[in-house]
Picture 1 (cartoon, rainbow, N blue to C red):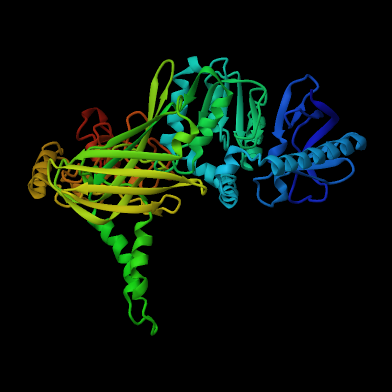
Picture 2: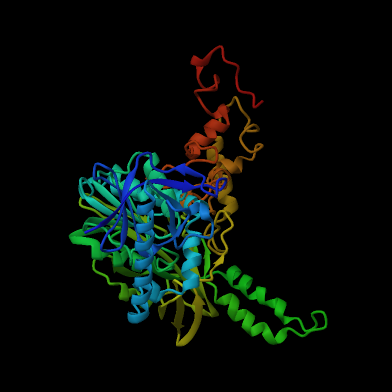
Length: 586
């Protein structure tokens, strides 16, 4: 049975009033209690629960004889992250302080005697965890993820398309962050959502819940999923646990751990993950990484011979997985898929991932390494929705990942290439990746550190690799120009079209296959987008331009930029517009 410590007023300690200056966090007095499973619970006079904090996840300190402050252990040293409990009676405050201290001492003693660390603590280096939770405690990082339109809109669509799985159900949001997925769950009809967040973002999440008047539905629980408790089992677990190459950050293990709270027959959203890998060629990338080590070739750098370190420098640069995006034509094979069912998989299944493959070369070239991307499926009672990071789809903040071989291999059309990818989980919340490819009896390998990738993405439109053109670009241009001039009205000579009369910008470039099949007209508008919105158009998700409006199709954009081509604006094309001044290009 929970032990009550009287009524308190919940306040936020502010930067300007550090002594005891506080701003209101909750309008009414609430009752504070500590449960047998070591949760600090706040309830209203009606009995409705306001929020709860696991003792394991917070640290506390007295501010005065009647005030006590708690804040997440994962928070940085800024005191403004604290929640202040202002007791109505000093005696209640003293009793709470003593109980808090006893339980904290008891936990330390139990850990000392039994080694009773949580699953998360056992697998994670302390410095890595501290950096990780500090990183996700920043609003700027939450913004970066939320502004990934493909990511955020797909999650919302998956839930709203499967309201049968959410209506009047109890949901858990693992790694809730800002709480955006919890809000989507409520939009889909959820009765109660437990938003579990281990970083200091939990306080911001709670503030959003209150400001959106959803405190009766969304219960923010601060702490790691491996350490918290909630009062009931849930029907659905939602999370966004994917990292680079699907598994980086090892958040998927926490997602699977949460199944201890899942009712039999409950659902996981996402439900399944597919890691795809394929062989690729990219001479420019290979030379770029190789040339970085040329600095260490110098035999007289200020009189010092550096060349002894060049081999190690090469290994260091090639040890970095490359995070960027690229043209699909750089692939020399179709992809091999390795799947994990989140409903049946165990955490331990992700400690060592061994993926053998046998791929057929679809076009000749030089194999420079292995490219990776992933898809996840939301398998609901009504509909299955996919979120893809494939190079053929609109770009997300996950991009794609490529792992270079130290020594390239020659591949012939129709040849079978075998190999293996081994991912070993480490205590830095990432993986050590070993790759191996064999072609014509020759094997090339490399070992990479997924924790230390090379972020190469520049925002430029991807280009096809050299040698990918199978017809004369010049002939294709003149044919396209001829077809275009057939529809240009006599009233214009084409000199006033967009981009200073460069008609080529109005055409779909015959040999530049942009992502999504769009031509150069959209490239400038797309370059202004932020987050994960760069990339081509997906008909399911209407992209927006850098002015906030809907992205125009190629035909719409031509007409909007050049009214001479728009019959609704040019009287020469529409006699009904008599009285309007003809378009002159001015």
